[in-house]
Amino acid sequence: MDDIAHFIAGEPYYGEGDRSGPVFNPSDGSTLYQCRYASTSTLDHAVEVAIEAGRGWANASQARRLAVIFAMRQLVIDNSDELARLIGREHGKTIADAKGEIHRGLEALEFATNAAQVTKGEYSYNVSGGIDAFSIRQPVGIVGCIAPFNFPAMVPLMMTAMAIACGNAVILKPSERVPGAAAFIGDLWRQAGLPDGVWNAVNGDKEVVDAMLEHPRIAAISFVGSTRIGEYIYHRGCAHNKRVAAYTGGKNHMVVMADADLEQAASAFVSAAYGSSSQRCMAVSLLVAVGDDTAEQLRSLIVPKIEALHIGAYDDPKADFGAVITADAKRTVEQAISDAVAAGAELVIDGRGFAVPGLERGFFTGATLLDRITTDMDFWKTEIFGPARGIVRAQDLDEAIAITNAHEYGNGAVIFTQNGHTAHRFVTEVEAGMLGVNVPVPVPVGHHNFGGLRRSKFGDAHMYGPDAARFYTKIKSISQRWPVRTQSTIPLSLAFPS
Ligand code: NAD
Image (cartoon, rainbow, N blue to C red; front, top):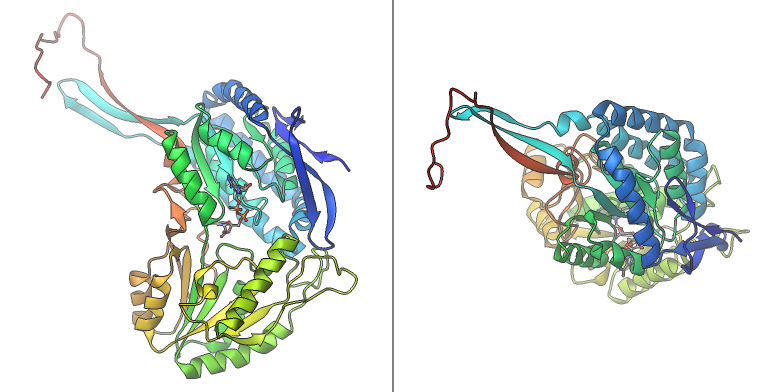
């Protein structure tokens, strides 16, 4: 069983003395290979390589950088079949779903072709006698990107496309559960003409992450993952004087008003709630039905749709969703269902103990629906990263908004209604970073900022969208005067210039 290596200086790198851990195929429970876990000395090597390569890349012309981004976009398109298979095998998501994430990753590359536009400086002419003031944006240097398991291609592309386009060098730390896509993407960057060493990947766990957070030559950290780890990364990274953007967990409420098109809302709920076995930060977690009659009607529309879902291996073309990431994740989700039932929730569809015939060792959990979830239950409070979803009943819009805002997370929230005033109140009053009106998964397109509020995001900066250009560059303000020697003198005065 071959080890998955790191990707440093444009080629696989096997650090001496690195630990390793297994990478599973969640669809059948088998171990695919071992993944190297980088030691501090492997990270030091990656940083040395990035410093050297980054110097040249920071000075490369905008035209040269742009050519690489365009070439990379085409290579991702040309290799999307192979990349999607690789993602599905390690993650468990269906090939169609993997292609969807690759498509969203392409948006990051497409937006990064605007780097020259979004990093333009400002110029003020003649601010004082013969002095012009202007600003320039330059790359921050080396960016450390720490990624989650649930989007093995999209998140690394989102994190790194603008960083590279702005002239930085990158060290990506993919999730140790899905390391394959990173090495694949690293090789595409090489083929696209990116100089070796500008884009690197080190695999591993806490040891290498901590080393990244403390390394004096890493200037910025982008993190996507759970809230517990993201909060730690934000504070430790800031304590080491880095700029940090950390996107974290979500518990996304979907409010359905009585006036909504309930058939449309029911379909939207099932696809947004259970797609990718609910392992998406923007998945709908809870359906907030406004009015008991709305709840009953929605239940009767949703139940047959869930019962018709086909669960299977990543490469089963009929599968609507696949396995969860690990055997532990399956246990955690099933325990959360049992706890909710014990706390008084009504079990409408029970997915516990589900197995796919012939794949009994796979990490599958069936789609589960619970009704009468209340805000005192752990099921409402915690992010459940698996296909167990719940219905909360609210009596009116005020209560639905209050429930949504009472949650500690504010990643996404959506409303289904046909009333413009209701929708306007919702988007004005709900404290979530990404909101949808009759749109179940409001992930913004690449030229809008992505990111949550409250404990779904730490740090003010965005790592994706127009603000990413600010995060991945530092600004310098310059005051400049070109006096003609014989016609101008600077009077000698020690007073503060006014
Ligand atoms: P995770 O927090 O377990 O891991 C994320 C990264 O942190 C991985 O690279 C992992 O190796 C590293 N890590 C794990 N434990 C660590 C520790 N103790 N110290 C230092 N580093 C550590 O998250 P996950 O399970 O891989 O991903 C799922 C989570 O990511 C969910 O909470 C999901 O909502 C979130 N997510 C958020 C967004 C967003 O945009 N807000 C997008 C995708 C995923």
